[in-house]
Length: 197
Image (cartoon, rainbow, N blue to C red; front, side, top):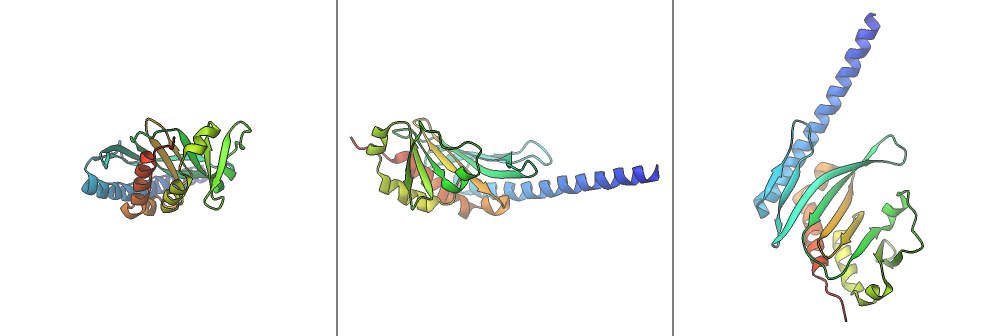
């Protein structure tokens, strides 16, 4: 009986340590998001003790939201964290830029109906729904923007806004202003690219 109690106490202590570690990590991300508030206004929202913080504000007059997301890795044991960014900036066409490295780790393979163009030495794939869109895009300009934003998992550019996710192995470092700024600037620039007629 005493061993059962000791086991429960140890397990409970381990859970508390993990929760405390997560809280400390999210506190640091919260402070990093406060740097964005200082630069661009907006606010940081957080729902509780060990809850992921979210930032909401503007960048170059475009609405902006930054949050932390996660998913189980393929092995099912660990979680992969992402810095997720939404920017309301209307693009002229819909397309997606995907990291080759990230695509290799996803369960879905490239579908045959999807149209891909390799960019920046095959590090990224540009996905469009129609060959004509691909011909109208300024690929050199897109590659230059992608170089500034690297690394990221994907960025979806649509007529209603942009969504980006960056794989994060260190949420504290990756949420610092100097690491977020190239993503914000690049997303804004991607939203401003117009198509050739």
